Length: 152
Image (cartoon, rainbow, N blue to C red):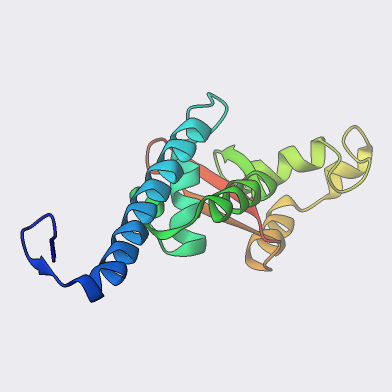
């Protein structure tokens, strides 16, 4: 007969089961800590916007960022951070500001310095991008403006 940490008796025949449950519980705690450490290291990069990432996680997965370590595995964290890097389009004053910059950067073809840019209805294009499902935006919690994300 054995005793658990809290002093309850464990019969010899139940010891393996008790041992397996304890190992599983310790493994879960270790993985949570590893996920938390990996997330903290990833977020510590000065190029990362933690506000944008937190909004993204809440919007895409329904989790607060503080809950991540207990709800995903290390491989899922890697997929999550990769997805964020793929879809995050930056912090902008407005959706229209994003569209104007995208036009100037040539995202819609080589129109940036062309006379044709004077004839582009950026408000309609913005509406099509963001309401049509190609992009979405989330308001920043810490500063004025929005975060733009590709919807892919």
